[in-house]
Amino acid sequence: MGRQALPGRALLALAALAASLTLVSTVAGATGGPVVTVTQAVSGLNDVAAGGFEPPDVSVAAGPGFVVEMVNLAESIWRTGGGTPQLVQTRDLAVFFGSDSDRLTDPRVLFDAKSGRWFASISDVDSEKVLLAVSTTVDPTGTWTVAPFDASGCADQPRLGIADDIVVVTADLFDDCDARGARALGSEIWTVNKAQLLAGSTAPAFSLFGPTPDYSSVAPVQSLSPTATEYAVSVDDRVSRVVHLLAVDGVPPATVTVREIATPVISLLARPPAAAQPQTGGIRPPIATNDNRILDSVWEDGKLWFSANARCVPAGDSLIRTCGRVVELATATRTVTWDTDLGVAGAHVFFPAIRPDGDGNLVIVAGESGLKVLPEVIAIGRTPDGALTEPVVVAQSAGVYRGDRYGDYFGAARDPGDPRTVWIGGEAGTDVPSGSGWATTVASVVVTAAGATPPAVAGTAPPGVLAVAVVVHAGSPVRLAYRALDDGTAVRTLVIVRNAKKAIVYRGSTARKTLRSDKRYSMLWPTKKTRGAFTFCVSTVSTTGMQSPPSCAPVTIR
Image (cartoon, rainbow, N blue to C red; front, side, top):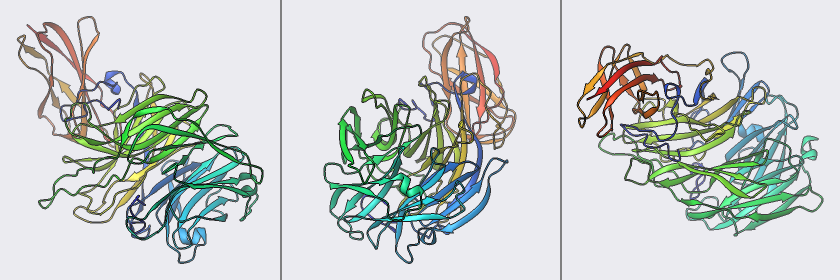
């Protein structure tokens, strides 16, 4: 639920991803960069199945043979590993948590590879408690035990983190669960004995910290490698120039310490603007992007990543947009090692969630919309050397989203059975043209290094294209022409220009658009006072990352 309400309240900018997109970062496939591929996708929970409230708060977890999605008041579980994921269970979270008729909101779910168990948390609005559930086996369709923890007020957006011997739950506390403008009380942190939870205790030993006004919101990490310390991060409300790095140590009933160990500087992180949508019925309904609080956080082998909504002016744009902020910290040196806004000229990127795969690539899932872009879920990959992939569209809204609120957060999880695969989930808007309501999607993605062969793709092959030779006079605009060989929708066209020595002198990409068979298209190469012989190659990329074979032709500038 958002900072103001409860239920039913509920790159490097991707440089110039504009209508005539010129990429500063590496682009995929024909341009020699890494590729992110959607290997499988299924329809997730929607507003009907998940209780009818908005916004959808999407959380995803992956374990051996299963992927789990929790959204608002429902959970779905798919069996994986044998082709298309098979839905095996959907259940009401009131039954799952045993909360009777109490109002619930903001579920989170994780799989802990160290213990082989699933963990889930949710806020019980009426009893002012946070509920923490643990599976009794590695099978999420089996039984779970639930431990309740009293909150010192309305527990907004409880977050779930796991280390070797403790489970940490945090929440943003308010003095009222229903009133708009409720007074913020700060953050509350529960540190729980993990071994007792795993043994089935519904009243495990725990330590309580806060609520403290020192932090408006605290996000504990999912620890993907062994660590006795549970890390957590926080930023200042509305505007932040630092990240507060916290360490939680100790196992209750023994003494637990929660201390701030560093406050490294980050790029200005300010509350984002609303995101635009295409005009409908004479209006342009905005999408609320809430605030700058940390949305997702994860730690592995000394690296901590977190994501948030931010405001930035993307390269090639002149307006402030909503951008997805992703920051990487080194916890040993307590320093920021990567700090970037994922921005799109002419559009907005929001609610980013993150997970590293087993090869050190970072997968980012986010929402995107704009005056010319219907709401959609996109995936982006970042390789260990810092190269960003072209974004791929995982799912797109069938029309303009007409609800009052969009998702408060998206989800991502690494598959422990196949560490190259990261499962993602997010809201894709409505699945009914001109209709109301919302739908989510769940998908698996794989990042492939430059030059490597991408995995099999779930999706339709993009149209082939044929490059056309170009001859122009120096000083004249150079339009790189190509002809579509097939029809294709929501397709990006990529080009790369090399000089006579085979060195790359230009990379570019179009926005997603429809291509028609045998129609001629072109892309402007913004070169000035250049002469000589060049070669350009062109290919297309589908929304799921599938790429057509490149076609090349000479460019002569006299």
